[in-house]
Image (cartoon, rainbow, N blue to C red; front, side, top):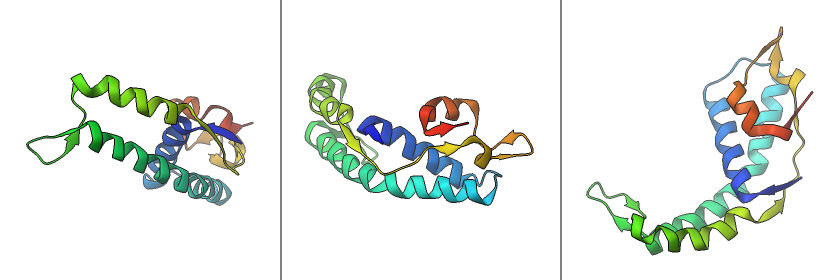
Amino acid sequence: MQLTINRVFETTITLATIMREKRPMPQIGKFRVARMHAKLLPEFNTANTQRDDLIAKYGAVREDGQTEVPAERMPDFTAEWNPIAESTIEVDIEPLRLADITIDGNGAIESSELQMLGDLVTE
């Protein structure tokens, strides 16, 4: 499936949240969520390293020791990050089936998460 790096970011974070919160769903749903996350994670990590490198390049260290990109450097950061975030990659994943993440008609995934996952969840 073709996904943008930005979509990989959003999906990986959403799946991690679902897994961390131990949402009730059939075992097959848990398996498919975990498998999708596992296949996306290496791509997420690669892109996140690139993003971190850009933050280090354009950022400044705050008093708490964290690095952030100041507003005046944000256009430069964005100019380099957007082509990466908008690039597409092929990831070997299958959409989740709604039946696999539902118990007795109750879904384990919130409507906002379904909206974000979009075509990664099918009927």
